[in-house]
Length: 176
Image (cartoon, rainbow, N blue to C red; front, top):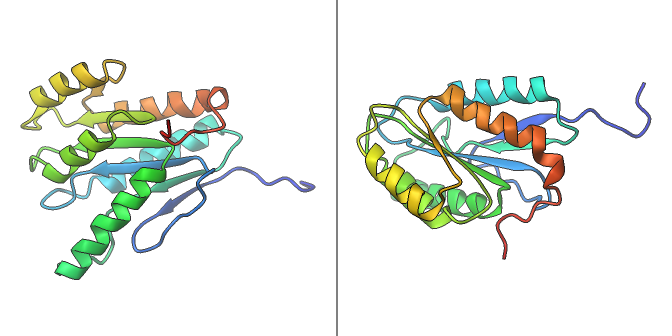
């Protein structure tokens, strides 16, 4: 029996739910949504497997921006953009996935905005049309960040982060 201690756990949050604990360990799953396959389900499985395998001594909250029941209206789009902006700004680490179906202009914009902040994991499908641009831009701005070409490799990067997180806590959330 545990006395005053709880087992660390992983939880996932999607819009419209919000997460406000700025001191928590958080990971944002950025990537293509419009016109893409629902890749987030597979990434959620991989992150869960990694978390359960590593068993870090800290809770992890993963923010997944893909809504289960999205209404394609101007008001809903504005709320979605605001939700993503707010949560990208507060997360401990950002993961970007570029699927092959579209150029993912919003995801490229978000990567450009947050490229200099905190822990960054970037992956793209080998058939992603702007792979060359990702390589060059990341090489110029963040040569410490390598691009991987499968969600399994992306989850391996997250594994490394979770194994080593004790060396980086308290998390600065990219604030200078």
